[in-house]
Length: 288
Ligand SMILES: Cc1cc2nc3c(=O)[nH]c(=O)nc-3n(C[C@H](O)[C@H](O)[C@H](O)COP(=O)(O)OP(=O)(O)OC[C@H]3O[C@@H](n4cnc5c(N)ncnc54)[C@H](O)[C@@H]3O)c2cc1C
Image 1 (spheres, rainbow, N blue to C red):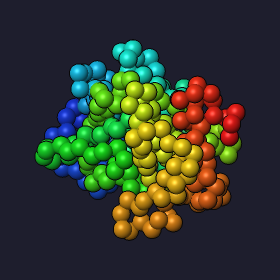
Image 2 (image 1 turned 90 degrees about the vertical axis):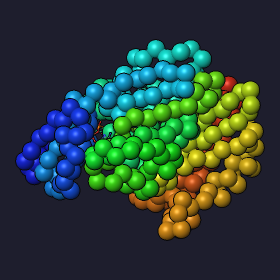
Image 3 (image 1 turned 135 degrees about the vertical axis):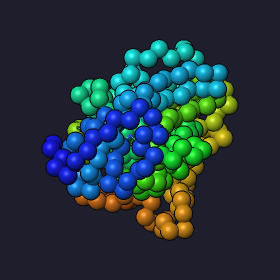
């Protein structure tokens, strides 16, 4: 799409070149969403490619993924064998769209776009990821937990000019945990109306559910031991608001694709399917 309002294109090699951030500037990563929508408010595109933030790093502390890492690169990367939870990241790529999107779109682009149907956000929440945020004025970077990054559909905590630099997943959460990715949509090519990424540690029995699609911003539900179906129903029912401004009844999305009640129900069904699959090896579809 021709973005008629865009007058300037910048390709900085470092953030100091864009320290004078203006309100009508916009970060450009893979461009798969930006060039898909009219952006009347954008006069300048700030291309991130030359910042060289596309690394995938395996360290003793865990996994670090640069914001401009192309999504497909996660599929091709050879992770250490014990890092079983990297399956959730590969599933996030496969469940998003076809290779035509994932060979150009970046991991950071999906997270920062912050659609409710994001496939990366629930995976990052389940894996206890945190995001490193850089500011254009070169002041100290800061970290935010994945679960706190998105505040509503297409809204994040990022302030103008702030940029997601990298994603970090602790070694404890990337190694040993088993994961299951469950996504439900009204039609095959449609946006998800419920996504649940389940992470399960077979030795400790801990369980973490990352939830998106059904809710306005990603959620975490965790248990110290494998939950019963009744505990899952209760946890979904009792899901708390993130702030006093968010009324409990507004946690779930409601639109022409599904009511809030339907999405809430699907969420608990997918949670049950995920944990059944991981603890019994049976694909939950047979039982629910
Ligand atoms: C056919 C199709 C199907 C899709 N299905 C889904 C789906 O099911 N679920 C879903 O979530 N999305 C879906 N999308 C949207 C998809 O997630 C995005 O197109 C893609 O992930 C954006 O990545 P990008 O690198 O191209 O980002 P861009 O298009 O370059 O940028 C997206 C937004 O994020 C901002 N941004 C990018 N990187 C950063 C950063 N590091 N720091 C701060 N801001 C940044 C940009 O300024 C822009 O506002 C679909 C898109 C298509 C075309």
